[in-house]
Image (cartoon, rainbow, N blue to C red; front, side):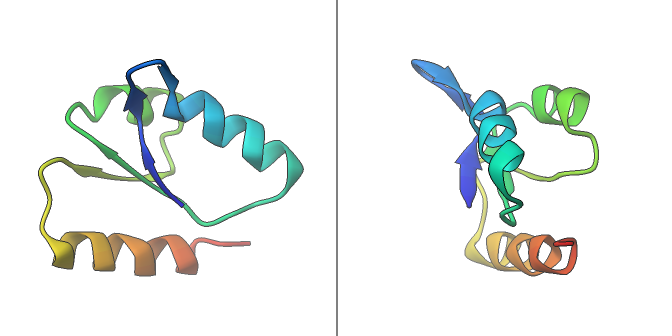
Length: 68
């Protein structure tokens, strides 16, 4: 999953927490402010917006390696 950490009408972090209670899915947070995801999910992969395609591809690879 590619998840925006700060959604207009919600919170991407809480969405990921809910999904991961059911089953692990590799995920990457994208955000303009890393402090939220790093505070609530410090072991997760977070990249800053705006980002280049290469950053996203590298983050995706890291997320897949971190999968249980």
